[in-house]
Amino acid sequence: MKATAQQILALAPNWIGDAVMCTPALRALRHRYPDAQFSVAGREGVCALLSDTPWIDRLIELPEKPSFSRMLAIARKIRPAGRDLVVVFPHSFRAALFARLVGGRQRLGYARNGRAWLLTHACAPHRESGRITPVYMAREYVELVAALGCEDDGTGLELGLSENVLQDVKAQLAADKPVIAIAPGAAFGPSKRWMPEAFAETVNRINAVCPATFLLLTGPGEEAIRDAILERATVEFMPMPRADAGLAALKAVISLVDVLICNDSGPRHIAVAFKRPIVCVMGPTSPKYSEGPYEIGQVLRVPLDCSPCQQPVCPLEHHRCMRDISPEQVAQAALRCLTEAGAVTTVTDTAV
Image (cartoon, rainbow, N blue to C red; front, side, top):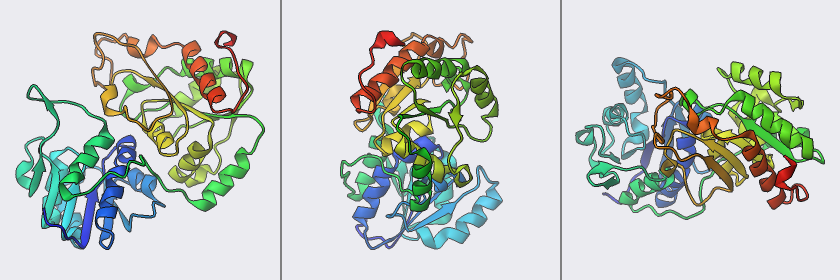
């Protein structure tokens, strides 16, 4: 591929977690083309996630699944941003079609979903025995931009922070107790969500042996999950600091916690970006997509014949991949994270 490019547009992944795992590749693009105008386009939430990232020149919000006519109008409007190069990180046919409508002279993406003809440079995905196989998403994205001569600097996932929001959140979280955040949601579907009653029992068990400041990180559409946890938990959750700041506040909070207890969802990868310990309850998705060298903490997973099924709803209706993970296991893992980080003195596993 051509070595020079002055106007570069990257189409970001649609999911929050995938977008975080894409940051090493985005940073590698910036380093490869330090003098280019570097724009990143994605859904509203992804743009909010990537805000305050110093090496991105411009963020462009895209609507979710627009009609073809609207897609064409948006492509024409932002065409200058991708004049020389468009990098397509999502795997969908629609994303490659959008890149073609933008009309970049070079269009790079993986050859998937019958879209290779829309790209000027279509890279082969990872395969085993002729079938596409999952790999750590951060690695997959970095290997895509390697076709441009980009090199991974090895520093891992990275997100920017609003300094004003960070200072506000830091002032509100100041305490002599460890800060534990609970992120019980997962946009993929209910199969990735551990039970609300299990989250509630976990915080009750932790608080019985290690009093802490607890935060419940839920967003729009997760009100029922939040209410179910609040109904069963005996601890008092601290109100979300600077909730008005949206994802900027979420990033700031996660950057300051002593441990995050979560499902395999966006907050997990935000914590990895800020090098914060996690305890992840993982069920129906393949760990090969998310296992990387940068994570601190523990992923709890039960090996079953039916897992990973990659389905948003358990097709067998027993949801054992999540139900067989106990609150005691999660509480013990969280306490180990706290003691290993020096946030609390040693607590024996039998205490919970």
